[in-house]
Length: 338
Image (cartoon, rainbow, N blue to C red; front, side, top):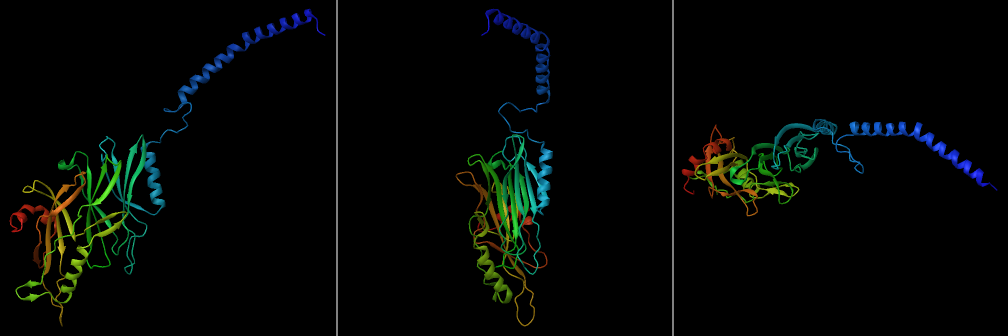
C-alpha cells in the first residue's frame, strides 16, 4: 500500500513535469502549428476546401490539347473550326468539323461521313454537347459546310448555325444537299440539329424539252429518278430526316422581308439517247423558300415561293443556287406563280 506522503510526492513531480513541458515544448509546437497553417494557405489551390476533393480545372488550352490528342489518336482530323456565343451566356462555344479515319469511296464502297461537334465551357471545363455524324447512304460520303454562323435578327439575338450536308445516295446519280440548322434551346437545355426543308418539293411536270420533243433516253430515266429521290425525305440517322436538293444557298429578299433559301434541282442528264450520243439541254428547276419559325420557335424553310417550280434550260453555263440567291427578287418578281 502507498502512503499519503508518497502520493503527495508523486503529484508534485507530475506538476513539475507538466510545467517543464509547457515551458520548453508548448511554444515550439504553437509556432509549428502557425507555420503549417501559413503553408497550407499559400499553397492550397484556389477552390479547394475541407470536404471538397474536386480538383481544380486545368487551363482551357491544356484541355484543348487533350481533346486534340484524343481526336488524332482515333484517326480523325479537324478540317474546320468556328467559335460563337451560341448559348448567349458570354462563353464562346466551339464548333468542329472532323474528317473520319477513312473517307474515300473505293469501288463505291460506302465511307464514313464527316462529324460535327460542339464544345461548351461550363465552370471552366470543356464539355462536348453535340456530336452528329450522318449514317452512310452511298458515295461520296456526307460532308458538312457552313452557310452562316450568326444571329438572324428575325429569330432572336443568339447565333445559330445554318449549314448543309452534301453527299451521295445510291438511288441517284447526282450529289444531294440537305440544309440544316443547329441551335441551342433554353427550353430543352441542349442543342438540336434539324433539317430546314420539312416539306416535299412541288416538282414541275416535264413531258419534253418544249414543243413536241418528249424526254427520251437517259433524260427520261434521270427525270423519273429525280422525282422519286427529291420527293422522299433523306434520313441521316438520329432522327434527322428532311428533303434534299442538288444545290442550296442562303440569300435575302427585300420583297419577302427576310432571309431565304435558294435551291436548284437537276431534272435531266443532257443526253436524250438514241443510236448516237445526242446532247440536249439540261433541265433545272429553281426554288425559293422563306425562312420562318414554328409556334415553338424552331426555324425551318416554309412553303416554296414558286409553287410548281420554274424550269430553266441550260447549255454551257449551268444555273447555281448562289447566283439564284443573289438575284432572288428578280426571279420572284418575274414569276407568274408568285
